[in-house]
Amino acid sequence: MKNHINVSRAGKSIFLLFLFWNAFVVAQDISVIPIPAQLQKGIGYFTLNNLTRIAVPAQQADVYKVASYFAVKIKPATGYNLMITESSQSGIQLGINSKPDTRIGKEGYTLEVTTDNVFIKANTSAGLFYGVQTLLQLLPAGIENNTEQNIKWQLPVVSIVDYPRFAWRGIMLDVSRHFFTKEYVKEYIDQIARYKYNVFHWHLTDDHGWRIEIKSLPKLIEVGAWRVPRTGTFASNAAPKPGEAPTDGGFYTQEDIKEIIKYASDRYIQVLPEIDVPGHSMAAIAAYPELSVTKDPNTKVNPGSNFAKWFGPDKFEMYIDNTLNPTDEKVYQFLDKVFTEVAELFPFEYIHMGGDECYKGYWERDVNVQAFMKKMNLKDSRELQGYFNKRVNKILSAKKKKLIGWDEILEGGIASEATVMSWRGTKGGIEATHQKHQVVMSPAPIYYLDMHQGDRSIEPPPTYAQARLKDVYAFNILPSEIDSAFVLGGQGNLWTEQIAVEQHAEYMTFPRAFAIAETLWSPKIRKDWDNFTERVESHFDRFDQSGVNYSKSMYDPIIGVRKNEAGLLEINMATEVNGLVIYYTIDNSIPNQYYTKYTEPIVFPEDVDMLRVITYRKGKPMGRLISIKTEDLEKRIKK
Image (cartoon, rainbow, N blue to C red):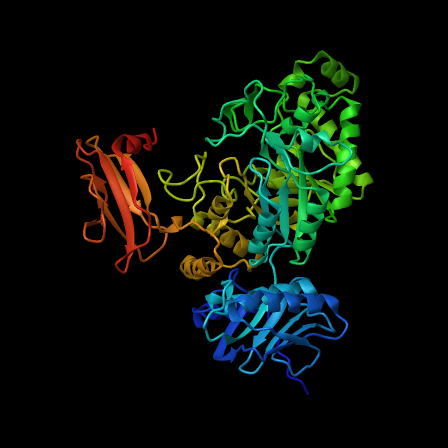
């Protein structure tokens, strides 16, 4: 007779919590990101060699594809040509569960490494793929190198049960502000696939470039994809000059897009296209001026020059009309053509319509628009945008697609089936769930990867806010007011106004994308910052091997400034990562480990010109040298 144990719900929670934290205790040398739901390390290792075989079930093409991915991935560093076979005696065995494992759902997996075999089981091939990503992270960091390494390729004996917390785990890349090649987009998709992301949000259109070929509207790429060249700071660049040739830009052909979608699909990533309307449409209007209220034939694709004045987070004035005319039927005919081709290209069930930062001033000053609003009983311009949103929703529904947009789409009313991406903090997401809309949490500034991540004196982009790694890691995307039943998941967004090159895109994405991945995949329990940073550092080693750039801002000190009772500057410093020592100077010399160690707040004498700071660990410099003039420190004091 079987023994039955009656475990209460509370008891089960305590037991699972014990399993998870036991994983932390016994597996400190295992550096998987995101951390698995359950992990138990054993004794010994499985050794991979050129005779190792990968077993897949007969006539399961999706499983074979995952096995091939693993074999191709490890070949450059190991030099091994692993054979894929149907023999059940092989060292690495991949399989779909004949009876679904209810613990792991659609994307979860189990992974068992013994001294003789490796077993990865899942309910779907997506789960197997994520199991393989974990398997790759269990191998030495050299596995990421593109040249053959003289390393003993060992996997620790381990038992893992793993599954995602959220179904939507996304990263957005803006290719309108700066164009990134097809080859790099695929590289970026590869990078996020390693951390179990499953949505690639592709911001394809904006004021600064239209990047997708629409064959029925050729001017969108002939005109809208190109602007005059500028290399300065975005929003400060000079406007186009008369007769200046628009030579900077680019676009993706429909064949390019199909290739990228296939590439992403092979990595179990859905591609979400964004066509940003009705605002942020200057590139489209430059190609077809009749789409706007003003119909200005001199509208140009913006090269990063200032064309707006901001009075607050949601209050602004546009100097140039960058908004589609929501009262013109020709606009909806235009959008129908665009979305017809987009829907045919992208298999994902969603299309993103943007809907954010729509300036309504030109609508409000146009007599024809006002007459239309009166005729349709629309009380204000927000309701007019709501009318536009509903028309777009109708177009997408006819093409069997679901609408998703930024949280402004709530303001004028939107169809009940529309999904909301909450970017203005968490407020929009909370409101959307109360209205029974599905939500993707993507709050600025904390999940905005374009925010600076260290001291602003040395961070590359001039931005309006900061999102340090520790804050991103600690952030809870489910505030108490939200109805979590409607939350699909979350997403990090990389806007590229100040990001012109690939290396900078990587610098801004990592390691913060590690923190977001862990929130979206790993179980919701108390997080361990110190353990996380240890794993982050091991992945820095992996990125060094693979040639991917990343930020080390977490090693830079956090610098606070106040005025003391005597009216003198007082500097307070702390470290984001434990185990660092801060050294500083106030005499204009360059500090190192032989200079003054920071132990208490620094009071500046009145004649100090400069603060210089650097962090060390075990005698080695970790952070960057930070030099801040006294006058700039003064500006940091909150009034």
